Image (cartoon, rainbow, N blue to C red):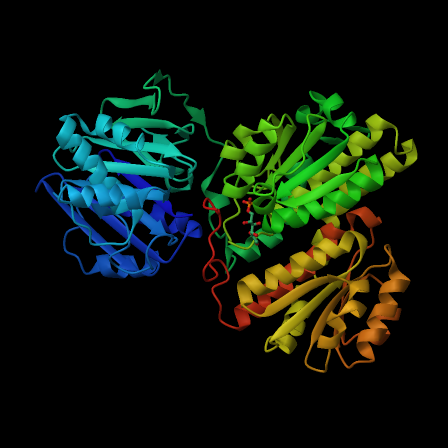
Length: 617
Ligand code: F6R
C-alpha cells in the first residue's frame, strides 16, 4: 500500500514523478504529494493534498515553478493518521533539510516519537513517517554522519516495514533508499536513476532495474551510480541489474475505458501465456520446473495447505477441489491472516502453496515465514516477477498474467486457477491417480479455454442489460456448488468491492440452512448452474428461490433450457469439463459487477478504501 516514486538525473523530474504516481495510484489513492529540488535556485518545493493524483496535478498546475532534476512523489493509503493534507507525504524533518517518502509502517513510532519530543522535536502530522525522518535527522546531527549512515542507524532502531526514499537539500546529488517488507526498484539509466514501488513509472526510460532485497539500502548518486549495502550487517552488496520484460503497452489502457475491463478482456491471452511452454498437449506432458525439481516433496506430501487472501484465496478454494479430485492429496485452504496467528499444526511432510498476485501481501508473507520455520516446503504462485513472496518461497510458478492494475482482481484469478490446474494434473499423473485418457482429455480441454473465454465475452452486451436491470439492488446473493462454489464467492466479492452493493456467496445447498430467509421479490440471486456439476440439484435450488419470488440470473451452459424456463435472465458460457468450468463462469460475473459499478458511477479501477497490494497486516 502506498506508492513511492523518485527521480535524480538530467531531465525535468516533475513530469516523470507525476506520471509515475499515476501509474502507482493502484497502490493507494487517498492523498498524494511531490517534492522537487530546483537545482538553479537551490530551492526545495513541496506540494501535497488530500485526494487523488489528479487533485495534486490540478494543484501543481497553478504553480509557476515545477523546475528541478530531483523529485520524490507519494500516493497514499492511510495507515497512521486520517487522509488529509498534513498527513500526506512527503514529510520534512524539523530543520526542513531532509525530506522522506515512505510505504509501510513503523510499528514502534510512538516510543521513538516520545524520545524525540523530549529532545525538542515537534510534529505536525499524526504519521509514523514524520517520526522516522526526524529520527534520521537526530541521528545525523548527534553522530555527525552522512545521510546514508544516518538512515542506516535510524532504521536499525525501528520495528516495522518500509520502502523509503530520503533526500537532503544540502546534498542535492543523492537520494538514499531502503526497503524491508515493502517493494523498491531502482531504474538504472545513463547518469539518471528512477526509484519506484514497481517498474511501471520508468519503463519508457530504461529496461534495467535493481530490485533491492529485504533489509538492503542504497545510496543513489546522480553520476556516481548506486551503492547497495545490508542495513543490519553493514555489508556492501554487488547490485544485480535485471533486464525487465515489461513494456509500455502492458501498463496502459489500450483503448478500454477502465483497466478492469481491459484485464477482463485480456484473459484469453493471459491464460495462453500462463500455459505456454508448460502445456504440451501433443506430447502429453506438463512441464513446470518448480514442480519437476521438487516432485517428491509434492507426491510424498501428507497434505497441501494453501495460504492466500481475498481473490487469491478463492483461487485456492478452486484448487482444493481439483487437487483432491485428481491428485487425491488432502488440501486445506487457509486465510493467511488467520493461519499465521493460530499456532497451526504444520510438519515437514506438508507442502504449503502460497498464492498471491502482487507477491507482496503482508499476511501471506508472514504465513510463508511461519510455514518455513516449521519445516514445510513452501511453493509460491505469484504474478509479479521478482516480488517478495516469489523470493521467499522455496520454489514456485509464475502466472504470467502481465501487470494487473485494476484494483479488483480478474485475470490474476483465472491465471492462478490455470497454474494450479497444471500442478494438480502433473501430480495426478505422477501419483497415478488419473488415467491416461483422462489426463489427455484435461490437457486438450485446458488448451481450448482461451477460445471459450472469447465466446463467453461475446455476452457482454446482454450482461449490460442484466446489469441495468439490477443496478439498484441493495443486496445480492451468489450461489454455486462444487467447483463453482468458490466462483460464487468471487462473484460476490467483485460486486461488493467495486459497486458497494452488499453481496454474499453461498454453496447453493446451504440456502435452506438460513440465507433463504432473505429471499423476496427484491433479491437478485445469481446462480451458477452449468450442465456439468450437480446440475439437477442446482435446478432444484433455483426452484426453491423461484417459489419465494427471488429474481434469478442463471449462469448456464450454452443451449440450456431448464434453467432458462425458471430464470429471469440467463447468461450462457460454452461447455467444458467440470473442473474447468470456473475459468468460464467467472467471466460473466466479472462483467456483471463491472457494468453495475460503471452504471452507478463508481470508480471501478480504484474503489474506495482499497489498494492493490496489501503490504500491511
Ligand atoms: C480482490 C482483490 C483482493 C486480493 C487480495 C490478495 O479483487 O484483489 O482480494 O486478491 O488482497 O492480494 P494478492 O493476490 O496480491 O496477495
